[in-house]
Length: 260
Image (tube, rainbow, N blue to C red; front, side, top):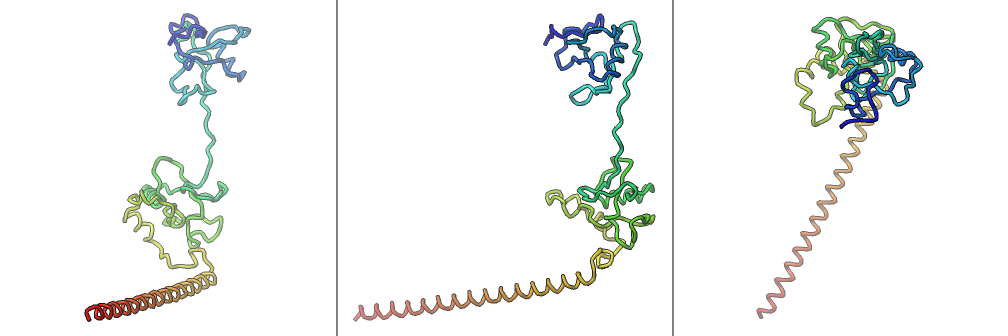
């Protein structure tokens, strides 16, 4: 679709007037970037830039996002006889250290995060245990996912042969994707340490004992309730059978009287 109102400001641009509005870009509001545009295109600094546009033909392919031109982009292509005086510098996203475990609620400071091991075999093992893909060079994990025997203190370093075992996201695994948990990965997850160590689980022995007592009491209470329900049902069945027998006897006597 031709655009007769908006034309590319670059002299002799053969696509001028033949681009749709989505391919025509305003001069940026940022003074420093706008000056680079002006000097690269070769127009006067006093030029009225209202309703002036550049077409996408003059930008490098990496200057575009999914739908828009990046704010740092500068026109450098097909600018006539003059070469571009300035080039856009892509903005780097700030690198934020955080725990790589999915849905980990902790917000540990950077100095308390542990980098995944560099040794290939151990790195691969950690990825499998944590249900992660090798799509990032820098993966971190917080102390929440290790046993107390591995990290007895907040500032302790992770031993070379240690593996993460706690709160690795398997608890919230989608049942429809349960096939992702293979016997091999589950075996690796359970291999090194026994889950029966109450100390490593971070549970106080008193609380653990109390929890067991409460569970036992609750279980016994449920058994008594179930027993009472079964007895009541059996009693009801017996009453119904007795009523049926009385009814059958009355019917037989009535038939006998009619036959007389």
